[in-house]
Image (cartoon, rainbow, N blue to C red):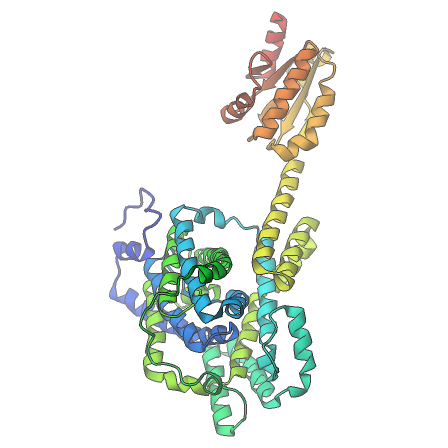
Length: 546
């Protein structure tokens, strides 16, 4: 049994923890069923996400097989399922358009080392502190982008040139070719959506996406429908992953891929840790953030070596893994092996899958991931949350994913600062509770501070305290309810003490906690300008000696 009296090493893979706790044959049987269930979900999604990202479907399978296996083997979450994610579609597509497929592989490779660095520097603990409105706005924006990326395949439209990446230009280009709608493709897409939704409601235990794609493929083959399939666009899928090889490391190509690698790293870290948090909430377990980032880094390096692209934790597949009864990382490793088995045995069958069916699957994925209720709840909850979620959403949709996250995070920080500064209060102290003489003393003014006193609160309350300090011989500030003060707040009290001293008075700070006192003293708020006393009775004694 594992020793629970001390915390486990933060980089220890959960697979080792599970084996130390004891792994039985019944656990293996449960993981086999969970792994098979997740593989059935991952199979059509991996190909659909790859195609939507501008690469061949086989690269989605490589990513699932290599990346998914390594994430489970080395990760810090018991239930994390790694693979290609819908959130990356826009970034991957932009990378392919700018640098080509080899540039995408290089960016993925570099991103792996950046993720290793994040984990090695123990930054995983901080990446989790993304404001909730930012995650909701970001996810909703991604959902809109995924859906719009599938409009061409949903309607079977034909463009004379490449499809624009920017959403407004995309909408304009698609509208201009509205006369090229392929109605059989549109019918297949609608039927796929109806089957995915209907099976989920009527028989939630069945693999709805796989069944819908399989039936759509049969309908197209039997009916002789002239619509695009994986085979007509990409040819037959390979039966095995390629031999591993290093990407081209020329300075020019590295420089071109680096911005995308940074974006992949930021998004991958956020997405994977959010997925791990979701798994924790469903299972009652606790993941290891830094171990998870290290595993994501190794998985991206491995995926790139085999011709795959960005690997991250996938929330929907991870949740499916937990609900399917997974006992640990073995189910994730098996899910990758089951997808590999499909490639070895049934890869030629994938050629019959209509692209419209895969577009229908992604349309449902986009609808489910939009977090519509949470989005509108935040919009209606407060002006601050509404500003953050809307700014993040609009920037993600119309500008850039990374820009949306960074600006949303900054706005969330400003909203937090404002709320915390409003939580800090200054109010008159009641000296009459201590003694009537203190209450009647015109040379003494007592005020009580409440809440954390940092730069935001200092800017708001500093002028109030400054005006109060104009006249009394003894200015008493009760710090009993101040849990924290930063350097800006401490500096404001050093200036206040100097002002009181110039007028012949003395600043008394009552009930200061040790850590708060240390911060005050570090900024010069110390003897003889300031007198630290335990209570307000001590102020009376000190004044009697002056």
